[in-house]
Structure formats: structure tokens, C-alpha cells
Image (cartoon, chains in turn red, orange):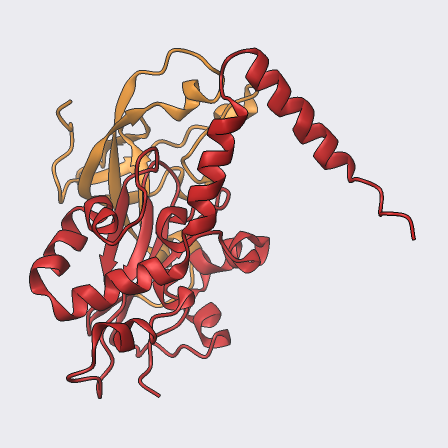
Length: 194
Length: 98
């Protein structure tokens, strides 16, 4: 059976990379190194940061004041990445992150964004009807809680620090981290102690 | 670079539409043009993306986190809900006195 034809987009990418290399803007090795960093990043990094913040008050303070330094301490590579801001959920305030302009996402600590994060529907609706969007995710935010939608429009990247669920007293950091999903770090879901 | 607006300052996003005049790259969302908000804090100074995108020399501009009530923006939604958005200083003016 013949191999499927190579997509035109890949040929275009090859020509773009060759042009950038010819102009001395970026080398193929630099692109490969950056790709490797992004491939290594995953929501597990963000989850470990949250679990540490739940159990270590000093780390929590660091996370909220200097997200990039807090991420580095958990093994993320922040060199060349935009600054990382961390938004603390409280009993009175819930945060939801979106990028209405494109798909800005804290890749250094969450990896590649999910397809829905980049969809027109999520980007248009999250800023306009966040409660309806959250309800579709099964996330009910009580009326006495303020929802803050973070439109990630410029040079920062944003991650949510969810609240530690009840019933997790005495849990290890690893076990706590297992509760923290990518969706909770974006703010569309809440961690639950099953 | 000293921020012109302190946290808590009421500001208005300029009702400017440079995209009508030609190609541009703007990080200020359409739905906030002309809207009033409150400075949450300055986030630092960053190269102006409007120049950066066209490979022009890009001076650094102060970037703010600005807080907006959702209801006046959309004429719907819950009164307690807010939008927190990064806006560059050159897109902000002091809000009119009431």
C-alpha cells in the first residue's frame, strides 16, 4: 500500500524553517530543543506545583508571587517562556482562563493546549457567559462566588491554583497531585476527592 | 519603567480601531474598547507587540492587569462576575470623574 501523500502544510513548514535558518534567525537544532521542552511539559507539572502549594505554605507564597521560579523548582524549563502568573481560587472567587485573541496557554507547565481551548466557541463564550460554559463542564459555581475570567491577551501566561478538596487531610503530595487535572488548572473543572 | 496608573485607578480603554486604517497587530480585545475598568496591578514592561509583529523597533510599554465588571460589557451575566485582562498603558486613559 502506498504511503499517504505528505501534507502540503509540512512542505510549507520545511520552506519556512529553511528560510529562517538561511537568515540566521533560528537553527533547526534550536527548534528541536524547544520542541523537546514543550513535549516534556504536561499538566502533571502544574499538578505537582498545586499539590506542593497545598502542603507547603512557603511554596504557595512563591507560586503566587513568582510562578516561573516556582515552576523551575518543579523541573519545568522556563528559559525563553513568558512569565507565569498563578491565580488563587478561594471560597469567594473562582478563576477561569481563556485567550480570546488566539490560544495563549501556559505551555511550560501544562504542555500543549487541548483543542477546545483553541475553539471559537470556548473563546467567545468564556468571557461572555462563563457560568453557562462551566455548567456544561458540570462545574457549578455558587451565586455568592465571583467568577473572574482571565483573558490572556498579552505577555503573561496564567494558571489556576484550585482549592484543596475536603476529605484529603493527611494525603501525600503524589496522591494530591493525582486529583489535579489539566481542566482544573484552566478553571473549567474543580478537583474532587472521589 | 514607572507605571502611570496605580492599583485601584479607574481607567478607560481607548475607543480606537486602528485595524480600520490598515494592517496591525493589537492585543487589546474589541469587546473592551471604550470600556471602563479598574487597574488591578502593573505586570511589568514588555516590548510593544504592535511594533514587534512587524519587526519594527519595539519600545517597552507597561502592561497592566485591568479588572472589568462583566455585566456592563455584555448587558447580561451575573453582577459579581469580572473580567481580568492584560492591557498596555498606551491603550488606557484615566476614567472621567463622576
